[in-house]
Image 1 (cartoon, rainbow, N blue to C red):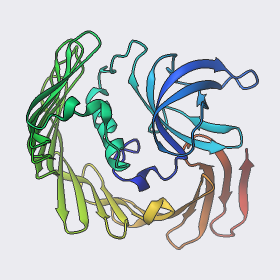
Image 2: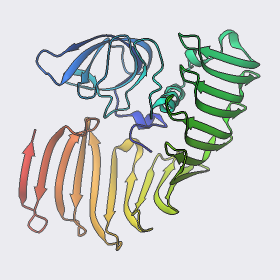
Image 3: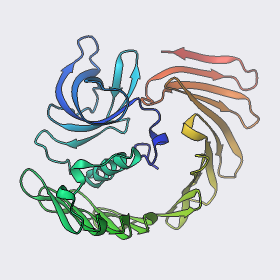
Image 4: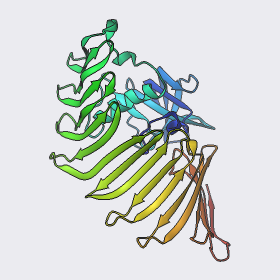
Length: 350
């Protein structure tokens, strides 16, 4: 799973404020040129208290007045802050009220929009049929009167096709539903100026079973994802040119996860990671291609900081690295040790 994706609330536990907001104003910080102060109006709140201003890390911001964003922010001593480059924050509508359908992110935006409502058990007022339509086809429109999406309903639930369109009328997402659950084929397309299939998913009663990705020319990429569900377990396997690339196993009952990554040119293990609930702690084994353990890592999270302890194969401490959990590039502490003597060879704090 990509670090910007999420499936459950515990994937979002590091955030203190999550909301769908409209940007009211953007100003530079007078003392810190690296951030903007952004006034917001909450459209729908999912987590945290009501606030009307957040700070925004400046690099690659792209935030402007009248846009609509889904903001994932953390709190520190100067307030609630976000960064659409290194967090799950994403732009939903531009200043003209148009859903952003630029290349690479169009169907991803629709999926995240629906997923955040699902995770927090909220109704999507903008995406629900008006007048409580129970049977037939419902359509939603862009400001230019172009159909934004249409869906078939039976007895009040999705049953049939659901299609998202760009402002120019090109298909962005094509899905099939049966009794309210994704079933059979779903297609996701590249941006409006490249209307070709980027990905296809195959579902059985709402459970993703197989995924194929395609390049800009429509040629299937060598990466295939197969996903299995068994009782409380979820297994995500990725194949690259017929070889295992990675496997992710999650126990929905205990919330423990196991990640196994393989070397691309062989079927040998590259590293194994174990995660405990809410990512409070996890450990990792890194291997060389001859399956000899290269190093161990222990990672835990506390007060919005990530602590990484690296050890040699014989469990001698090599280094300690501490950084902000969300903004990983903000390193707070970097210490290196001589594995034999355990003496500190480098020590830096910020």
